[in-house]
Image 1 (cartoon, chains in turn brown, purple):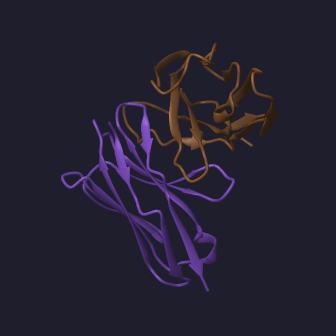
Image 2: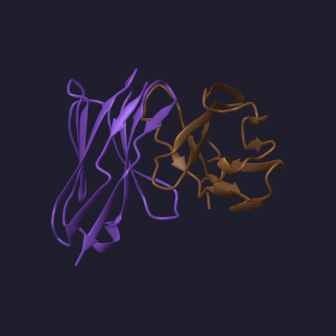
Length: 116
Length: 109
């Protein structure tokens, strides 16, 4: 399977704990995006990378959230001191950004986080 | 800020045609996407418009009017499997896309 993969698919944690999610993009894609989605809402942009550089981070994202893409391949999203409001589906997407094309984003299956 | 509006819910009959509208007011525009999302699954790409006009792809067509900040997704010959949420998303700069909250389409026999 050469699509976007995410791990874990489900995570249940207690409030105050730290969690880390992993995303493996499509191998030739240079851009990687993180979104958060809650029931009945569209995906909300969190951050994105071009290769290993983090180009933008949403102002809605608190300092408890951090993302890395150290070698320009896989990425991790860490949430420190989780809160119940962090419960959501965390989606990763990748795209091939170049001089032509649509930057069509291919989404992974998501990681569903439940904070108790 | 960014604002993307779509109807919350729509219902249509199997075999019919349905049009899902999307209006947007964004700080930038580098194209508009439509995605399909089944419950509990990730969004999947349906179409992309960057120039005004109609793009047709099988049973699905998408239209864009940049001057009006308006797009629609047209689904023909509806099938039960088309029951899903349909997301309108605007690429507001070279990377970031802003999504609407989606239109939940229910196809009835």
